[in-house]
Length: 284
Image 1 (cartoon, helix red, strand yellow):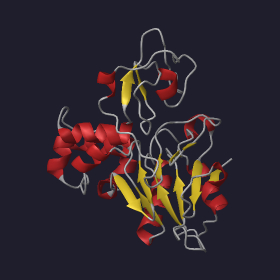
Image 2 (cartoon, one colour):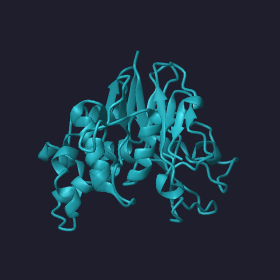
Image 3 (cartoon, rainbow, N blue to C red):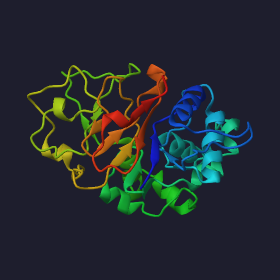
Image 4 (spheres, rainbow, N blue to C red):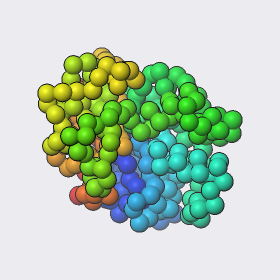
């Protein structure tokens, strides 16, 4: 039976990570050893380990140590990808604390499928995942294509790591949790969007979304609904408020926006076919 703990976006908040690992039962024998679980459980990290919080280096040390020892796996988040893209274009502002970890970031996959589950940062999108299948950021030619707007690789990575977006009508003003006005909103990509309203589709929900109008078919051409009989898929990225539901059929978002709310989330998976909120765990 698969026993996997899927941990949401950490964003440099090491105290919350340590608290969550403890609640999940992970231990280390001394300060120099990596965390492991006495029952052999492993962690899957959904990406975005870095930025925003105060201790990205400490978070990387923990996650990388667990990965090296076999007690964790991780996928690439958009923040790690953006860092690697900055290196490719020669941005000299790449922070020193990340330089020793760049080669490790380059090895991280864009998605995982193991133990009966799937893990990806933002969207399980088969067409995009096919374009970047078996690719990592180690491949310099791939990276050049991935950062070049309009290429199939760039489009695929933007979808998988950042979500599927639709324009927000001007009369439906939308600000994200950081107070930034957005002209586009991410959708509940697992749904069949045909005929659904903005209120049905925008994720996470916001008060100004119309329940009587929705995106046009042309604005939804990238959508690939996720069948309910497919394996459970775990995502991060969406910065969900504490009270926002995190489980939607066979899709679970474990990003509870630790930077906004000070709470880090995980799902304790033990092979069940039907995901249940009772298995959600948080650091607070």
